[in-house]
Image (cartoon, rainbow, N blue to C red; front, side):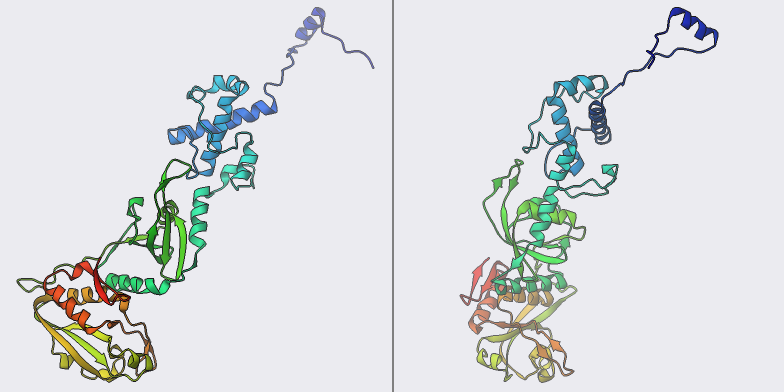
Length: 397
C-alpha cells in the first residue's frame, strides 16, 4: 500500500491555482461523556429559568426536580465537570455551596436514579411523561388505600349519622380543606368520596425531611380505618379536588325575645313509647323513646301512628311533654337529636308498601336523662353536653 503523502508548498500553490481550499482536519470537540454532562447541565439551567430557583431535594418535589437536584449536586462535587461547564454557567449554579444529599444515591447515574424513583424511560425524551407521582404522593395514596376493617365501628357509626343529619339540617357546613393545622382529633373531612373522622393523634414528631408529623387513627364512614400519617391525609385532601372539611356544628339561638322565620311562640317537646310487638322493641320498651318537637298538639302529631314508619308502624304512648316559649323549634330538635345521636335506634321498618325505612327520632335513653336534658335546654347549657350510652348519662363535651 503506498504511503500517504504530505502536502508541500508546491502542492499548496497548485491547489490554490485550481481553486481548491485546504481545510485542516477538525478534532472531535467533545467526548460522549462530556456531551452527556453538558446536556444534563442545560436541562438544569432550563429548570432554573422556568422556575426562578435551583432544583431542590425532598420527596414532596416532582420526580424531575429531584433528578436535577441530585445531578447538580454531583456536578458540583466533580472538578472535571465544574471545569467543563464553567464557561456555560451564566446562572452561577456551580458557585453555590454543595448541598447535602437527601438519600444514599449520589453514586447513581440518571437512569439508575430514575429506576430508584420508580420511573422507567419509555421514550427518547423522558420529560414527555405527563405526570409522575412523587414518592410522598405514592405513600399517601397507599395509606389511603390500605384501610382495614374498623373493629369498633359501631361506636363511630352514630357519629357519622349525626354529622349527616347536621349537614342536611344546615347545622354543619363544608368548606375546602386549607391547612394541615385543621387535622385534629374529633374533626371530620370528606376525602375520596367518604367521610373521614380523626379519632386519635399520636405525639408530634419530626420526620426525615425536618417537618412536623404525627400518626393518626382515621375512621371512614364505610366501616374501615387507617393508621396513617397526618401529612399523608393532608396530601390526599389537597390532591382530591372534591375534598372538604366538615365544620363544627353551630346550633344558633334557641330562644328569642321575638319571633322570626322558624320561630314559634310556643313549642312542645314530646316523648313517646312504642306499642310495637317487635321482639327488640318490646325488650327495650322502657328506654326506647321517640323525641321530637312540634308546634301543633301532640295528639294531632301522633294521629295515625300505626300507619307511619316514623312511629315504627305501631301505636304509641305519650310518656312526657315539655312546653317551652319563644323557641326555634327546628334548631331545638336538631340539638336534641345531636346530643342523643350515640344512642339512636338502628332499625329498618317496612312501610305500608313494603319499602324499608330507617326512623331517625328513636333513641335508647332513659326518661330521667331526657328530663335532665330539658332542664339544660332551659338554662342554655345542653349544647355543652353529649350522651354516653355506656354510662346512661349526659357528660360535658
